[in-house]
Length: 458
Image (cartoon, rainbow, N blue to C red; front, side, top):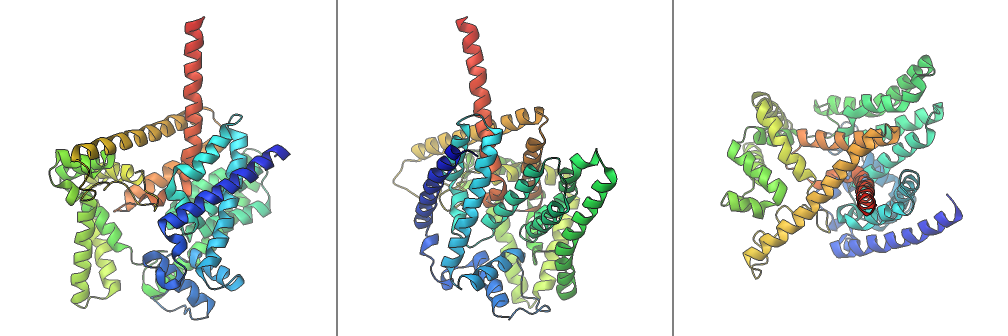
């Protein structure tokens, strides 16, 4: 990077900090100054972190660490170094955010044409509030994005160089990522191929040796925690008590074709648009109906004295059975789930699928439909450009583009096959890929337009 590049990055980073602070106050995350203000996943991570910090974590405690452990360990480290308060996490996550932006600024300089990297940077820091929202949110999304970014930095900067330092560091980063977002566990074989690909053609024995060490480190980190969970709870999964998620996914797989069709329309145009075709859908969309059934069943089992372990086993077994019995419905229903995963979000990172449903009654229904339709059309156009650019990037046969394309496709497919109701926040670890593809797509389109125009003029 030249001195001019550093100057640009400094100004753009200051702008990014202002935007993140604005979203933090607007969304309320910067107003949660006490641990008592946090609920749901945030509360679970905080409790685990404080238990580690105060030496209260017991290996044999089945109730500890129902969530993946890496982010709680990170929080405990932050509390120990800076102080046991939310502001400590805000500061460190802002530092992580700056590291993430620095990496992508450098990648933008290398992969994009002159000045386009600035457009990419601005998109990354302003266009998708669901990303900026997590800078000050005590949840694992930004930490996972940092780990993905750090691993990509390792892959990109080493190019043809394969050293033991890089191998060990890469194994540790991937292991931490798996213990943050377990969905990445199943990508390990492909990631190893990317890691040793260049060395394979020069020295296969050396490549195999590095691959084995890499696998060993990942297995040590992820496998040890899976073993702990199996010994303590009888469940080897990194994230505990997820049977209800699989059951819900199976319920979507066995839904009627009418419901899957309505869900597909809603995933494209939003619940309000789907309500035009299926009357009443907006008030009771398929994902929420499925979730309600799961919660009602869980409540009934709890009232009947069924243990949490037995309840989880019931849901896990039942969910797998539903999927196994409805393979075609399982595959087809992945399409609307995939589209919903890529839905636009508000300033708090929540999907806008339910936009205008039961709210703002002062606005005429026709105006609501027009606004939702135009907004969705613009978003679908954005996604279309991203897909078009990914295809163009694939044709370049550039290793870096291959890696970005793989991670993007893998995260989308993995979540669409496993989880419902799906949330756009699951895409945070790969969101920068969307924006760099979008800029490349716009570049390609403008180049085509210029060529056509120059031909017509001549």
